[in-house]
Image (cartoon, rainbow, N blue to C red):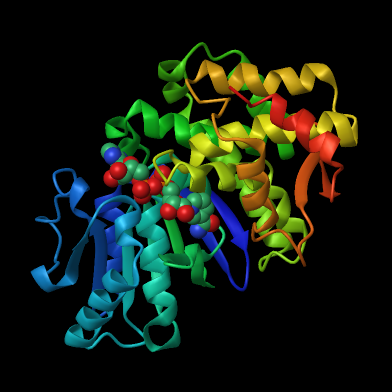
Length: 348
Ligand SMILES: NC(=O)c1ccc[n+]([C@@H]2O[C@H](COP(=O)([O-])OP(=O)(O)OC[C@H]3O[C@@H](n4cnc5c(N)ncnc54)[C@H](O)[C@@H]3O)[C@@H](O)[C@H]2O)c1
């Protein structure tokens, strides 16, 4: 087992390589009442029968983004009330990033904040969503616009969960791993250069999770509430979010980020002087794991959404770029030529 410390509004550990039932049993022993939130899609993997957990103590939610709704949160608050969940009690989220976002949000809001534990089951959840304390749900106004910064007490990663994860979802998580490599840890890229395909990447899951969590922990530790330094984690995300939204969320977050990374690399070449080999490496790695690198959406459609992106301040367009691997740069209001050049690299 590896443990990585995250220093946010308080410190907590990310434990990589635990056995989820053992860890959950300990948590159940440490609180009077615990409410576990998990998606029904995983009910056949999640056998709670050997744990001291009543039916009332498990709340099954819909899969994917459907669970990140105010209606689902409301239903869970109702259950919290029925269970009389107190400040000394806890919430546990077991599932992909959508589930840990939801569980963390309910924990942040019930009694103005109770403890919660994240048990991520997808690669995206392990390397990104469960680490860093951002929690939230979706509303008609947009995705993740309602939420809270509320760190978990522990992130417990059982790597065995990845065995049942589809190649598509594993690859989507790899997009965030590759992003971590480009912004901060070239050894991730070196390892992935030597990795032939997605099956081979699965064999490196433990080390890839460890290195990516270390990158995220380091960044979050310097800027928990994203005043500036944490924005480097958004490399590839400005165009990525726009494309994800244009797809009506039919693309996985990581798939949209993959296209966004190609865009960001070409923008970086133009604006920050990122080298041609480093730009090409983005496409080589992402394509090798079956991730998309082009889009059919028009430049105009993407620009409108990028201008409204959460990172845009007072109508300006802001991007995270790279001058070299491991050296992020903040790009504000690039010229329309620079944006067009970057767009041509992702246009189908
Ligand atoms: N809070 C943050 O900082 C942060 C960061 C990145 C992403 N996110 C959020 O995370 C979500 C994306 O994460 P995700 O891709 O894990 O989404 P997800 O939770 O929707 O999971 C993707 C799919 O994988 C399935 N799955 C999960 N674990 C599985 C397993 N072990 N075996 C088989 N299937 C499994 C899920 O049922 C789902 O169908 C989005 O809602 C995004 O907004 C949050």
